[in-house]
Length: 487
Ligand code: ADP
Image (cartoon, rainbow, N blue to C red; front, top):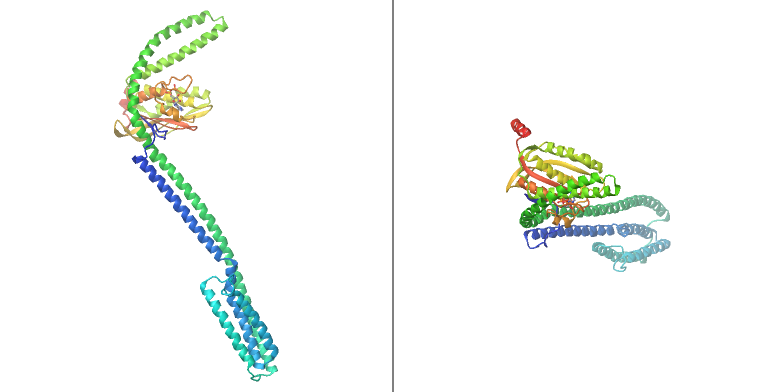
């Protein structure tokens, strides 16, 4: 019989990190750190790119897109003014040209990045182009002044100029309308940038949420890998070492205990007989009846201990016969459910396709009764005990075989790490009136069936004990069933 534990327990000695197990643990830790680090780096990179984009899409950038059209508009008005002056030589026209050209000169100086360090122009190309424009404007003003200083006569009369002005007004109107259209374009452009900024903010939120989810996933994966791969390795290592010692201890203790139990059984029987006659005589004295009741209960307890010790120390040889998992579990349910229901505990059998195995049904019932009794005692108040069976492949007698697991699962308090270390030690009990032999007897019987006892526990949630036995892959013939029934 082997005892296997499916859940990680406190190791019996410190973990050696140089062993293959330690190496796997380190690889796991390093991989998790790498994945988490990579994810955080990716997040920070994306974050900085988003911020750069946001800065680019701000209003000063929009403003810089409009500088060229401002200059174009100013120049167009100056050109017209200069043309009118050249045609009629009106001093008022020259004064107006000078005023507008000075304003434009100031405006250009103000935006020239070589004169104003706070200019809205950002790229090197823009800065260079604006600088050249400023120089060219100075030359433009120089040539305008040259036209003013020469003494050429007027080329057209005032009436002709009025007609030209009228035409010019219409042209100006057209230009204004075109500018209005351009303004509308710019407004649309600004709206587009605004919505782009909104989209960037959304992308950022989605990015953060994805990273958080990714990290949670990595943590969950690490936990699952630890639980399913690393922890069972550690458990098996611990168990294979302690198993041999336990077997030797069991054999010695069994012989000793059987001797003592035998000696106690005879005086117990005569004590019981004496108590019976004493009770009859003292029936009329209520105080004495109370005492005899207590003595009777204690004798019963001693009898149970003696019975347990003898079952543990001198188990009878099992008579193997074909059994149906469903029938066996239903019979045990019938035996125990009424009593348990009185204590608020439901005993249920989970339905599954039936499986067959060879075992001594009497012994196996004792195993299940012991496990159910422990399960019930672990439940504080009301709860449920579930009996189920399933087919598995298991290593039994050194070979991988088809097997059946009979499980007793409870919703009790679970087994503490401290108790786990001594769980199968004879006479170990955490209960006030426990004999500490229930699990030892179970282990003995399963051993004699060449089976395997396994358990899984979660403190505060419950425990599942499983008895693994070799499975009969073919249902028994009618003759075999008849033989078993008559036996
Ligand atoms: P006893 O029932 O007389 O204490 P056992 O050998 O049957 O002796 O059990 C030993 C100990 O194992 C129990 O005292 C209890 O602490 C623990 N144990 C066994 N089964 C369970 C279970 N299903 N849930 C919680 N603890 C359990």
